[in-house]
Image 1 (cartoon, helix red, strand yellow):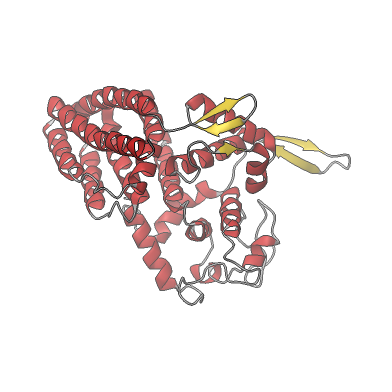
Image 2 (tube, one colour; image 1 turned 45 degrees about the vertical axis):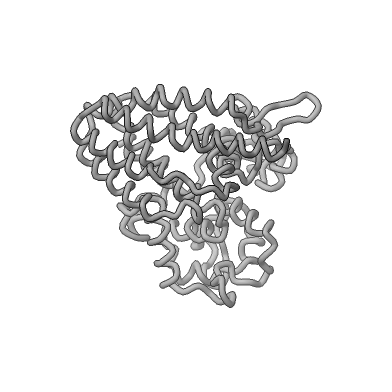
Length: 380
């Protein structure tokens, strides 16, 4: 039961990561996942409806009476602020408009968006919005199980403090760093981040300290926190650890691979084959990451999987940033590597699985190191 819940949480985070660079689409998903939110009603929401609503309150407008509307969750508020920062919306505008003409989206367009997103994120096992809402919807509402509530002089509730806010801030910053939207060398101002995310500076500073501990940022006494620079030495160290741990994980998994895992791997492989990594580098990276983590899923060590996930996060900025900036054709042999990995796992051949996995990690790594060299020569 607990594993199923964790899997659902991972799927929700995967959706959010994929849509994080598209705040309007992310907002749409966040609303649609909530119970009793009809698509036709959500499409009538206007920008000023959200502007006048406080976080964790229910939306009230011409469609929903008090106590009936969707909850303005932390995730919705954050995506809405990101949309406002892009400066492309007016107070009276419909929140969900077509990209051409600015008209209200149709339910057909929404269905198409859901289908495409589930396909790109390899989550097609959720058969449309009803199943998404049933299984992931309850996880979207903010929960504060460890909250400590204080009262003001009149005895009313005045503040809620929870470690979950720090986790949300940390996850959000990590995703921006991984995607390169917060680039290496950029200074991280706690006050600015707190304003953008509508939280106090305390959880932001805690999140920044955690970023430093995990290697995503460094702290200078005079400059404060700065996103870690890309480094060939660091990347080599990360990749050496990845090869060591991931080869061990896939070797163990080959002896215990479940039929359902093999089925999922084949599905993700097909998804990757249909993604153009030049046009959709984030979608390609997410699907590739999912393939690898699925391949190790049955290794029998949750701790090993957690460390592998962290190493993937640390190596992701190198691939996201350098691949996106490069005009050199990207390596494509990974598709064959994935086919051979599945074949080896299906046969229970640990050694063969290790060898193909090692090639699959090393080949794009060699490409990234060549990009490093090209960049170094260009600035000499």
